[in-house]
Length: 104
Image (tube, rainbow, N blue to C red; front, side, top):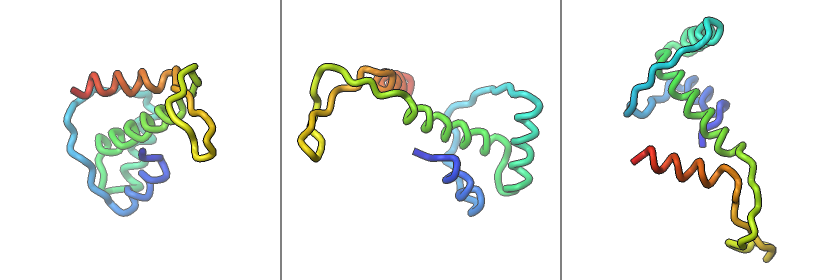
């Protein structure tokens, strides 16, 4: 999972990005576009599209981590102390499942 802090470090070192596989048209407010343009000026080795792509990817990673864990009734494992670990009946498993579905 990439976090925003990691992206900033990569931008500072002028890292390369994986090539885009899908194209998506995005509308944003003038203020958000100004912020993207400001980032391009701060990190001149990167295009607007590249920065938006990396920011979106980092935000999606953070959303997946932030989805609440809701313990179900089924024990799926034990932790290192021997306590039961219950299945997650929250949105995370569904998000992962749908991501796999649309990635095919």
